[in-house]
Image (cartoon, rainbow, N blue to C red):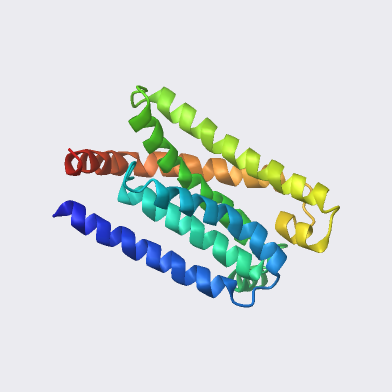
Length: 210
């Protein structure tokens, strides 16, 4: 019964992401930027769907994955530096930049919960300081890899408009460092606030598949 209920929730998450994907693909600000921003989300979703029966995750992990996919779909549609609501925040609070990108990197830190789940289920590493440290390091490594990919895209395209929009530095020479700090902050908050809840979901997952 519990497994059936969880499956319905997972299907609804997939339907919501699919609906946002369709909306995102309709007349985005730039199809080139849209393709660059959306590609990681589609690759990730394809992997999750392919592994759904062989390696099902907790609902918390699926919610985080869906949230991050939607985040990238919205950013791809508008371009991260031009998301309307964050433009309004920029004007209302007299910020120097649109902070959707920073907000997105903070939320990407929540992916640490998914990493935590994989480490706990696929290795013998126990809960504790080492798990916290290793998962945090993995989260930062993924964030760094994404920054390297952004840099490579910019180099390959020789600084074209699409690559500049994809980078989204908005003139800040420390943008990469800020992005990494935001991801680290999101990672720490997610691990501190969600770990115990996540553990309860892992127990239920084990019971439903035993």
